[in-house]
Image 1 (tube, protein in one colour):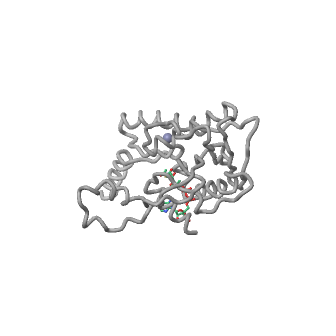
Image 2 (cartoon, protein in one colour; image 1 turned 60 degrees about the vertical axis):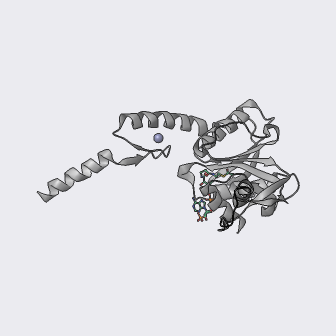
Image 3 (cartoon, helix red, strand yellow; image 1 turned 135 degrees about the horizontal axis):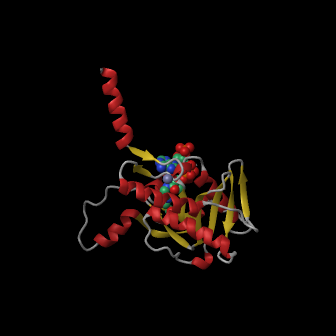
Length: 226
Ligand code: ACO
Ligand code: ZN
């Protein structure tokens, strides 16, 4: 009798529990028609966006046992810039960015990590900048604040007010959910540092992250301190 009960409970959990799709990474509940529909749509769109068929001319800037990094420039052939845009849209969608345009599209360089299964599993957009505001650790100094300087303090809360020299701004960095924690973001950034400015190697201080997410902050903190 006890065995029967156990069987029923297991079946119930399988049916109603959340499933993670092993190809697109979406977490959804398979028995819910609405969820199923959303998954089918997301799944197809994601796989179409990150599928890489191979190009006539590829600017390979780094090679690894598990993939390679391609650099796409704004003036490259349409097949290359379209793929860069498609992948950037997937990233923007996940980051919750509304606008899909870049601040300076003619100067943006897109780095794509293509794995051995011919999927673009990493994307980094870098733009030239002159200065940046360093993101500060969040100290507890909201105590003696007057209303007047609230706005100013609010800014100081997240960023230093002193602009610092930086040369390369990272406006997007994204790694496919099923390919994280394999050093792909690290390798994308290392490659940016050695290829962004022709003939020179950028230090970690010369690159700046714009508006990092919580994931982005954890990664950037780790990257910049090692
Ligand atoms: N939590 C804690 N530590 C982390 C995390 C995390 N989520 N991600 C990276 N790290 C740290 C770890 O110390 C890691 O080393 P370890 O795996 O040996 O412990 C180290 O950073 C290097 O990580 P990578 O493997 O190189 O990073 P990954 O390829 O997984 O990509 C990224 C990190 C890009 C933040 C990824 O999680 C992602 O795409 N997240 C969603 C999109 C996003 O938030 N992007 C950042 C937006 S900010 C911006 O675009 C400017
Ligand atoms: Zn899926």
